[in-house]
Image (cartoon, rainbow, N blue to C red):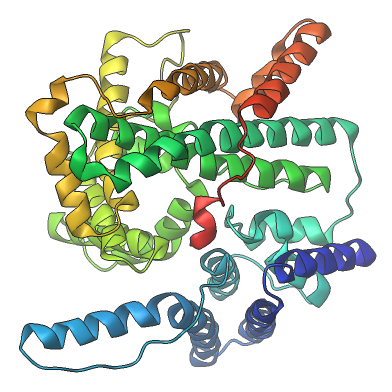
Length: 457
Protein backbone atom coordinates (compact mmCIF):
# COMPACT_ATOMS: atom_id res chain seq x y z
CA UNK A 1 0.00 0.00 0.00
CA UNK A 2 2.80 2.42 0.87
CA UNK A 3 4.42 1.80 -2.51
CA UNK A 4 1.13 2.53 -4.28
CA UNK A 5 0.78 5.78 -2.36
CA UNK A 6 4.39 6.71 -3.07
CA UNK A 7 3.79 6.12 -6.78
CA UNK A 8 0.67 8.34 -6.70
CA UNK A 9 2.55 11.00 -4.76
CA UNK A 10 5.41 11.10 -7.28
CA UNK A 11 2.95 11.07 -10.20
CA UNK A 12 0.97 13.92 -8.63
CA UNK A 13 4.07 16.04 -8.05
CA UNK A 14 5.23 15.43 -11.63
CA UNK A 15 1.74 16.33 -12.88
CA UNK A 16 1.70 19.63 -10.96
CA UNK A 17 5.37 20.41 -11.44
CA UNK A 18 5.01 20.07 -15.20
CA UNK A 19 3.15 23.40 -15.11
CA UNK A 20 5.73 25.15 -12.88
CA UNK A 21 8.06 23.19 -10.65
CA UNK A 22 8.61 26.18 -8.32
CA UNK A 23 5.07 25.99 -6.96
CA UNK A 24 5.56 22.44 -5.70
CA UNK A 25 7.10 24.07 -2.64
CA UNK A 26 3.69 25.58 -1.78
CA UNK A 27 2.00 22.18 -1.79
CA UNK A 28 4.83 20.76 0.31
CA UNK A 29 4.59 23.60 2.85
CA UNK A 30 0.83 23.13 3.12
CA UNK A 31 1.26 19.36 3.47
CA UNK A 32 4.01 19.57 6.10
CA UNK A 33 2.19 22.25 8.11
CA UNK A 34 -1.10 20.39 8.31
CA UNK A 35 0.48 17.00 8.94
CA UNK A 36 2.40 18.45 11.88
CA UNK A 37 -0.40 20.63 13.29
CA UNK A 38 -2.90 17.79 12.95
CA UNK A 39 -0.76 15.53 15.14
CA UNK A 40 -0.20 18.29 17.70
CA UNK A 41 -3.90 19.16 17.91
CA UNK A 42 -4.89 15.52 18.41
CA UNK A 43 -2.31 14.71 21.10
CA UNK A 44 -3.15 17.61 23.39
CA UNK A 45 -6.03 18.20 25.78
CA UNK A 46 -5.06 21.82 26.41
CA UNK A 47 -7.64 23.99 24.64
CA UNK A 48 -5.34 26.98 24.08
CA UNK A 49 -2.55 24.73 22.81
CA UNK A 50 -4.89 22.98 20.37
CA UNK A 51 -6.36 26.26 19.18
CA UNK A 52 -2.93 27.81 18.63
CA UNK A 53 -1.95 25.00 16.26
CA UNK A 54 -5.27 25.27 14.43
CA UNK A 55 -4.61 29.00 13.96
CA UNK A 56 -1.12 28.17 12.70
CA UNK A 57 -2.59 25.82 10.07
CA UNK A 58 -5.17 28.36 8.95
CA UNK A 59 -2.63 31.21 8.95
CA UNK A 60 -0.11 29.33 6.78
CA UNK A 61 -2.68 28.12 4.25
CA UNK A 62 -4.72 31.29 3.98
CA UNK A 63 -1.52 33.34 4.11
CA UNK A 64 -0.24 31.65 0.96
CA UNK A 65 -3.65 31.98 -0.68
CA UNK A 66 -3.86 35.67 0.22
CA UNK A 67 -0.33 36.43 -0.92
CA UNK A 68 -0.69 34.88 -4.34
CA UNK A 69 -4.35 35.54 -5.08
CA UNK A 70 -5.54 38.60 -3.19
CA UNK A 71 -2.57 40.79 -2.22
CA UNK A 72 -2.48 42.76 -5.48
CA UNK A 73 -6.27 43.24 -5.36
CA UNK A 74 -6.11 44.94 -1.98
CA UNK A 75 -3.05 47.04 -2.93
CA UNK A 76 -4.73 48.21 -6.16
CA UNK A 77 -7.92 49.18 -4.35
CA UNK A 78 -5.96 50.83 -1.53
CA UNK A 79 -4.16 52.99 -4.09
CA UNK A 80 -7.42 53.85 -5.87
CA UNK A 81 -9.09 54.83 -2.60
CA UNK A 82 -6.53 57.60 -2.12
CA UNK A 83 -7.15 58.99 -5.60
CA UNK A 84 -10.82 59.54 -4.69
CA UNK A 85 -9.68 62.12 -2.13
CA UNK A 86 -7.26 63.78 -4.51
CA UNK A 87 -4.19 62.19 -2.98
CA UNK A 88 -1.55 60.11 -4.64
CA UNK A 89 -0.48 56.89 -2.99
CA UNK A 90 1.30 54.24 -5.00
CA UNK A 91 2.15 51.03 -3.18
CA UNK A 92 3.82 48.50 -5.43
CA UNK A 93 2.05 45.28 -6.36
CA UNK A 94 3.77 41.93 -6.65
CA UNK A 95 4.80 40.56 -10.03
CA UNK A 96 3.54 37.03 -9.42
CA UNK A 97 1.30 34.50 -11.12
CA UNK A 98 -1.48 32.59 -9.44
CA UNK A 99 -0.52 28.95 -8.76
CA UNK A 100 -3.00 26.60 -10.41
CA UNK A 101 -5.42 25.01 -7.94
CA UNK A 102 -4.21 26.85 -4.84
CA UNK A 103 -7.78 27.68 -3.78
CA UNK A 104 -8.67 23.99 -3.95
CA UNK A 105 -5.85 22.25 -2.11
CA UNK A 106 -5.58 24.89 0.63
CA UNK A 107 -9.27 24.41 1.48
CA UNK A 108 -8.82 20.63 1.42
CA UNK A 109 -5.96 20.71 3.92
CA UNK A 110 -7.57 23.35 6.17
CA UNK A 111 -10.65 21.15 6.55
CA UNK A 112 -8.36 18.32 7.75
CA UNK A 113 -7.02 20.28 10.72
CA UNK A 114 -10.42 21.80 11.54
CA UNK A 115 -12.01 18.34 11.64
CA UNK A 116 -9.23 17.10 13.95
CA UNK A 117 -9.77 20.14 16.17
CA UNK A 118 -13.50 19.38 16.28
CA UNK A 119 -12.63 15.73 17.10
CA UNK A 120 -14.48 14.46 14.03
CA UNK A 121 -11.48 12.55 12.67
CA UNK A 122 -8.17 11.21 13.92
CA UNK A 123 -4.92 12.39 12.32
CA UNK A 124 -2.88 10.05 10.20
CA UNK A 125 0.69 9.19 11.14
CA UNK A 126 1.46 8.11 7.58
CA UNK A 127 3.15 11.10 5.95
CA UNK A 128 3.22 9.49 2.50
CA UNK A 129 -0.51 8.76 2.58
CA UNK A 130 -1.27 12.28 3.78
CA UNK A 131 0.98 13.84 1.13
CA UNK A 132 -0.77 11.79 -1.56
CA UNK A 133 -4.15 12.88 -0.16
CA UNK A 134 -3.20 16.57 -0.45
CA UNK A 135 -1.69 16.32 -3.93
CA UNK A 136 -3.84 13.61 -5.55
CA UNK A 137 -3.51 14.64 -9.19
CA UNK A 138 -7.03 13.98 -10.59
CA UNK A 139 -8.62 16.56 -8.30
CA UNK A 140 -5.61 18.68 -7.35
CA UNK A 141 -6.11 21.67 -9.65
CA UNK A 142 -9.91 22.03 -9.85
CA UNK A 143 -11.52 19.75 -7.30
CA UNK A 144 -13.70 18.25 -6.07
CA UNK A 145 -12.48 19.66 -2.73
CA UNK A 146 -12.37 16.43 -0.77
CA UNK A 147 -12.70 15.90 2.97
CA UNK A 148 -10.17 13.80 4.81
CA UNK A 149 -13.01 11.74 6.27
CA UNK A 150 -13.87 10.46 2.79
CA UNK A 151 -10.60 10.39 0.85
CA UNK A 152 -7.79 9.85 3.37
CA UNK A 153 -8.96 6.38 4.53
CA UNK A 154 -8.89 5.29 0.88
CA UNK A 155 -5.13 5.94 0.88
CA UNK A 156 -4.69 4.05 4.14
CA UNK A 157 -6.72 0.97 3.25
CA UNK A 158 -5.96 -1.72 0.71
CA UNK A 159 -7.08 -0.99 -2.84
CA UNK A 160 -7.45 -3.31 -5.77
CA UNK A 161 -8.50 -2.69 -9.35
CA UNK A 162 -12.00 -3.84 -10.24
CA UNK A 163 -12.96 -4.14 -13.89
CA UNK A 164 -16.49 -2.82 -13.36
CA UNK A 165 -15.14 0.21 -11.51
CA UNK A 166 -12.66 0.85 -14.32
CA UNK A 167 -15.42 0.71 -16.94
CA UNK A 168 -17.51 3.11 -14.90
CA UNK A 169 -14.56 5.47 -14.60
CA UNK A 170 -13.91 5.44 -18.34
CA UNK A 171 -17.60 6.08 -19.00
CA UNK A 172 -17.58 9.15 -16.75
CA UNK A 173 -14.34 10.40 -18.33
CA UNK A 174 -15.96 10.09 -21.75
CA UNK A 175 -18.94 12.18 -20.68
CA UNK A 176 -16.64 14.76 -19.11
CA UNK A 177 -14.69 15.03 -22.36
CA UNK A 178 -17.92 15.52 -24.30
CA UNK A 179 -18.99 18.29 -21.94
CA UNK A 180 -15.67 20.08 -22.20
CA UNK A 181 -14.60 19.56 -25.82
CA UNK A 182 -17.98 19.61 -27.55
CA UNK A 183 -20.26 21.77 -25.38
CA UNK A 184 -17.99 24.16 -23.45
CA UNK A 185 -15.34 24.84 -26.09
CA UNK A 186 -17.89 25.37 -28.89
CA UNK A 187 -19.97 27.67 -26.69
CA UNK A 188 -16.81 29.62 -25.87
CA UNK A 189 -16.38 30.69 -29.52
CA UNK A 190 -19.71 32.52 -29.52
CA UNK A 191 -19.55 33.66 -25.88
CA UNK A 192 -16.15 35.30 -26.38
CA UNK A 193 -17.31 37.22 -29.44
CA UNK A 194 -20.59 38.37 -27.86
CA UNK A 195 -19.02 39.56 -24.60
CA UNK A 196 -16.12 41.27 -26.38
CA UNK A 197 -18.50 43.12 -28.73
CA UNK A 198 -21.48 43.55 -26.42
CA UNK A 199 -21.82 47.29 -27.06
CA UNK A 200 -22.65 46.66 -30.73
CA UNK A 201 -25.11 43.77 -30.38
CA UNK A 202 -28.86 43.48 -29.84
CA UNK A 203 -30.48 42.59 -26.53
CA UNK A 204 -31.52 39.17 -27.82
CA UNK A 205 -27.94 38.44 -28.91
CA UNK A 206 -26.63 39.48 -25.49
CA UNK A 207 -29.17 37.21 -23.81
CA UNK A 208 -28.03 34.40 -26.07
CA UNK A 209 -24.44 35.05 -24.96
CA UNK A 210 -25.42 34.79 -21.29
CA UNK A 211 -27.33 31.56 -21.91
CA UNK A 212 -24.44 30.06 -23.85
CA UNK A 213 -22.05 31.02 -21.06
CA UNK A 214 -24.14 29.01 -18.59
CA UNK A 215 -23.70 25.98 -20.83
CA UNK A 216 -20.02 26.78 -21.29
CA UNK A 217 -19.13 27.05 -17.63
CA UNK A 218 -21.30 24.07 -16.69
CA UNK A 219 -19.78 21.93 -19.43
CA UNK A 220 -16.29 23.15 -18.58
CA UNK A 221 -16.36 22.75 -14.80
CA UNK A 222 -18.62 19.73 -14.41
CA UNK A 223 -16.76 18.17 -17.34
CA UNK A 224 -13.49 18.49 -15.42
CA UNK A 225 -15.14 17.04 -12.32
CA UNK A 226 -16.35 14.05 -14.34
CA UNK A 227 -12.86 13.51 -15.75
CA UNK A 228 -11.31 13.81 -12.28
CA UNK A 229 -13.81 11.46 -10.63
CA UNK A 230 -13.54 8.94 -13.46
CA UNK A 231 -9.73 9.03 -13.42
CA UNK A 232 -9.69 8.54 -9.65
CA UNK A 233 -11.96 5.54 -10.08
CA UNK A 234 -9.38 3.93 -12.37
CA UNK A 235 -7.00 4.00 -9.40
CA UNK A 236 -9.59 2.55 -7.03
CA UNK A 237 -10.72 5.84 -5.42
CA UNK A 238 -14.24 7.19 -5.03
CA UNK A 239 -14.46 10.99 -5.05
CA UNK A 240 -17.55 12.92 -4.05
CA UNK A 241 -20.13 14.04 -6.60
CA UNK A 242 -19.49 17.70 -7.45
CA UNK A 243 -22.49 18.49 -9.68
CA UNK A 244 -25.99 17.07 -9.44
CA UNK A 245 -27.68 18.39 -12.60
CA UNK A 246 -28.00 22.02 -11.41
CA UNK A 247 -29.50 23.24 -14.70
CA UNK A 248 -32.70 21.40 -13.74
CA UNK A 249 -33.04 23.21 -10.40
CA UNK A 250 -36.43 24.64 -9.52
CA UNK A 251 -35.18 27.48 -7.35
CA UNK A 252 -31.90 29.20 -6.43
CA UNK A 253 -31.34 27.31 -3.14
CA UNK A 254 -31.67 24.02 -5.03
CA UNK A 255 -29.28 25.33 -7.68
CA UNK A 256 -26.64 25.96 -5.04
CA UNK A 257 -27.17 22.53 -3.48
CA UNK A 258 -26.43 21.02 -6.89
CA UNK A 259 -23.66 23.33 -8.17
CA UNK A 260 -20.01 22.84 -7.08
CA UNK A 261 -21.18 20.72 -4.18
CA UNK A 262 -17.73 20.25 -2.65
CA UNK A 263 -17.30 24.04 -2.27
CA UNK A 264 -20.84 24.89 -1.14
CA UNK A 265 -20.81 22.16 1.51
CA UNK A 266 -17.34 23.32 2.60
CA UNK A 267 -18.61 26.85 3.19
CA UNK A 268 -21.76 25.48 4.85
CA UNK A 269 -19.82 23.38 7.36
CA UNK A 270 -16.88 25.69 8.08
CA UNK A 271 -18.43 29.14 7.65
CA UNK A 272 -22.24 29.29 7.62
CA UNK A 273 -22.99 26.87 10.48
CA UNK A 274 -20.42 28.47 12.84
CA UNK A 275 -21.85 31.90 11.98
CA UNK A 276 -25.38 30.63 12.67
CA UNK A 277 -24.40 29.78 16.24
CA UNK A 278 -23.61 33.43 16.93
CA UNK A 279 -27.14 34.74 16.73
CA UNK A 280 -30.67 33.93 15.64
CA UNK A 281 -33.41 35.90 13.95
CA UNK A 282 -33.77 37.40 10.50
CA UNK A 283 -31.00 39.96 10.91
CA UNK A 284 -28.41 37.29 11.62
CA UNK A 285 -29.73 34.98 8.90
CA UNK A 286 -29.52 37.77 6.32
CA UNK A 287 -26.05 38.75 7.54
CA UNK A 288 -24.84 35.16 7.35
CA UNK A 289 -26.17 34.63 3.83
CA UNK A 290 -24.47 37.78 2.56
CA UNK A 291 -21.18 36.82 4.23
CA UNK A 292 -21.46 33.33 2.74
CA UNK A 293 -22.10 34.44 -0.83
CA UNK A 294 -19.71 37.38 -0.79
CA UNK A 295 -16.89 35.10 0.33
CA UNK A 296 -17.99 32.47 -2.20
CA UNK A 297 -17.71 35.10 -4.92
CA UNK A 298 -14.35 36.32 -3.61
CA UNK A 299 -13.06 32.73 -3.48
CA UNK A 300 -13.51 32.58 -7.26
CA UNK A 301 -11.29 35.54 -7.93
CA UNK A 302 -9.86 38.85 -6.75
CA UNK A 303 -12.22 41.01 -8.82
CA UNK A 304 -15.23 43.13 -7.94
CA UNK A 305 -17.25 41.27 -10.57
CA UNK A 306 -17.00 38.05 -8.56
CA UNK A 307 -18.03 39.89 -5.38
CA UNK A 308 -21.02 41.39 -7.23
CA UNK A 309 -21.93 37.94 -8.53
CA UNK A 310 -21.90 36.63 -4.97
CA UNK A 311 -23.99 39.56 -3.72
CA UNK A 312 -26.58 39.05 -6.46
CA UNK A 313 -26.92 35.38 -5.55
CA UNK A 314 -27.38 36.37 -1.90
CA UNK A 315 -30.26 38.63 -2.99
CA UNK A 316 -31.70 35.74 -5.02
CA UNK A 317 -31.47 33.53 -1.93
CA UNK A 318 -33.05 35.93 0.58
CA UNK A 319 -36.78 35.43 -0.22
CA UNK A 320 -36.46 31.67 0.24
CA UNK A 321 -34.57 32.20 3.49
CA UNK A 322 -37.11 34.62 4.94
CA UNK A 323 -40.14 32.47 4.11
CA UNK A 324 -38.20 29.35 5.20
CA UNK A 325 -38.38 27.54 1.88
CA UNK A 326 -34.66 26.95 1.40
CA UNK A 327 -35.13 23.18 1.25
CA UNK A 328 -38.55 23.00 -0.39
CA UNK A 329 -37.19 21.12 -3.42
CA UNK A 330 -35.10 18.25 -2.08
CA UNK A 331 -35.75 15.56 -4.69
CA UNK A 332 -35.07 15.67 -8.41
CA UNK A 333 -37.42 17.47 -10.77
CA UNK A 334 -40.20 15.26 -12.21
CA UNK A 335 -39.15 12.58 -9.75
CA UNK A 336 -42.06 10.25 -10.53
CA UNK A 337 -42.58 11.01 -14.19
CA UNK A 338 -40.68 11.12 -17.45
CA UNK A 339 -41.40 14.76 -18.26
CA UNK A 340 -41.92 17.84 -16.04
CA UNK A 341 -45.31 19.43 -15.55
CA UNK A 342 -46.03 23.07 -16.43
CA UNK A 343 -45.21 24.28 -12.93
CA UNK A 344 -41.84 22.56 -12.99
CA UNK A 345 -41.06 23.90 -16.47
CA UNK A 346 -41.77 27.42 -15.18
CA UNK A 347 -39.65 26.88 -12.06
CA UNK A 348 -36.67 25.46 -13.95
CA UNK A 349 -36.86 28.21 -16.58
CA UNK A 350 -37.03 30.92 -13.91
CA UNK A 351 -34.01 29.53 -12.06
CA UNK A 352 -32.07 29.16 -15.31
CA UNK A 353 -32.77 32.77 -16.35
CA UNK A 354 -31.78 34.13 -12.92
CA UNK A 355 -28.56 32.11 -13.02
CA UNK A 356 -27.84 33.36 -16.55
CA UNK A 357 -28.32 36.99 -15.50
CA UNK A 358 -26.07 36.51 -12.48
CA UNK A 359 -23.37 34.77 -14.48
CA UNK A 360 -22.92 37.92 -16.58
CA UNK A 361 -20.97 39.41 -13.67
CA UNK A 362 -18.86 36.24 -13.57
CA UNK A 363 -17.87 36.64 -17.22
CA UNK A 364 -17.70 40.42 -17.60
CA UNK A 365 -14.33 42.16 -17.62
CA UNK A 366 -15.41 44.65 -14.94
CA UNK A 367 -18.49 45.98 -13.14
CA UNK A 368 -19.21 48.64 -15.76
CA UNK A 369 -19.06 46.03 -18.51
CA UNK A 370 -21.56 43.86 -16.61
CA UNK A 371 -23.95 46.78 -16.03
CA UNK A 372 -23.77 47.88 -19.67
CA UNK A 373 -24.34 44.29 -20.75
CA UNK A 374 -27.48 44.04 -18.60
CA UNK A 375 -28.76 47.38 -19.85
CA UNK A 376 -28.15 46.16 -23.38
CA UNK A 377 -30.24 43.04 -22.77
CA UNK A 378 -33.27 44.93 -21.47
CA UNK A 379 -33.64 46.94 -24.63
CA UNK A 380 -36.41 46.85 -27.21
CA UNK A 381 -34.05 44.79 -29.38
CA UNK A 382 -34.55 41.96 -26.88
CA UNK A 383 -37.63 41.03 -28.90
CA UNK A 384 -35.75 40.65 -32.17
CA UNK A 385 -33.91 37.59 -33.43
CA UNK A 386 -30.28 37.28 -32.28
CA UNK A 387 -27.88 38.27 -35.02
CA UNK A 388 -24.29 39.04 -35.83
CA UNK A 389 -22.17 38.11 -38.79
CA UNK A 390 -21.07 34.52 -38.27
CA UNK A 391 -23.92 33.57 -35.93
CA UNK A 392 -25.29 31.25 -38.60
CA UNK A 393 -22.61 28.74 -37.61
CA UNK A 394 -24.39 28.25 -34.29
CA UNK A 395 -26.97 25.81 -35.67
CA UNK A 396 -24.89 22.64 -35.10
CA UNK A 397 -24.14 23.84 -31.56
CA UNK A 398 -27.85 24.29 -30.81
CA UNK A 399 -28.46 20.69 -31.90
CA UNK A 400 -25.54 19.49 -29.76
CA UNK A 401 -26.86 21.38 -26.72
CA UNK A 402 -30.32 19.85 -27.21
CA UNK A 403 -28.76 16.37 -27.43
CA UNK A 404 -26.67 17.13 -24.34
CA UNK A 405 -29.68 18.29 -22.33
CA UNK A 406 -31.75 15.28 -23.37
CA UNK A 407 -29.02 12.92 -22.12
CA UNK A 408 -28.67 14.96 -18.91
CA UNK A 409 -32.45 14.88 -18.39
CA UNK A 410 -32.86 11.15 -18.75
CA UNK A 411 -29.70 10.56 -16.73
CA UNK A 412 -30.63 12.89 -13.87
CA UNK A 413 -31.38 10.00 -11.49
CA UNK A 414 -27.75 8.87 -11.72
CA UNK A 415 -24.55 10.40 -10.37
CA UNK A 416 -23.62 11.44 -13.91
CA UNK A 417 -25.74 11.43 -17.06
CA UNK A 418 -23.96 8.81 -19.16
CA UNK A 419 -24.43 6.28 -16.37
CA UNK A 420 -27.91 5.76 -17.80
CA UNK A 421 -26.32 3.74 -20.63
CA UNK A 422 -25.84 0.89 -18.14
CA UNK A 423 -29.60 0.42 -18.19
CA UNK A 424 -29.67 -0.21 -21.95
CA UNK A 425 -30.79 -3.80 -22.48
CA UNK A 426 -28.68 -4.59 -25.53
CA UNK A 427 -24.89 -4.44 -25.49
CA UNK A 428 -24.85 -3.38 -29.15
CA UNK A 429 -26.98 -0.33 -28.26
CA UNK A 430 -24.58 0.64 -25.46
CA UNK A 431 -21.60 0.35 -27.79
CA UNK A 432 -23.38 2.38 -30.47
CA UNK A 433 -24.08 5.16 -27.98
CA UNK A 434 -20.46 5.26 -26.83
CA UNK A 435 -19.36 5.37 -30.45
CA UNK A 436 -21.74 8.28 -31.11
CA UNK A 437 -20.23 10.27 -28.22
CA UNK A 438 -16.68 9.55 -29.42
CA UNK A 439 -17.66 10.49 -32.97
CA UNK A 440 -19.16 13.80 -31.84
CA UNK A 441 -16.02 14.58 -29.87
CA UNK A 442 -13.89 13.84 -32.91
CA UNK A 443 -16.06 15.95 -35.19
CA UNK A 444 -16.62 19.00 -33.01
CA UNK A 445 -13.57 19.35 -30.78
CA UNK A 446 -11.37 22.31 -31.63
CA UNK A 447 -7.74 21.80 -32.61
CA UNK A 448 -6.79 24.39 -29.99
CA UNK A 449 -8.82 23.73 -26.86
CA UNK A 450 -9.45 26.32 -24.17
CA UNK A 451 -8.02 25.87 -20.68
CA UNK A 452 -10.48 24.79 -18.03
CA UNK A 453 -12.08 27.94 -16.61
CA UNK A 454 -11.62 26.91 -12.98
CA UNK A 455 -7.87 26.45 -13.40
CA UNK A 456 -7.65 30.20 -12.78
CA UNK A 457 -9.18 29.83 -9.32
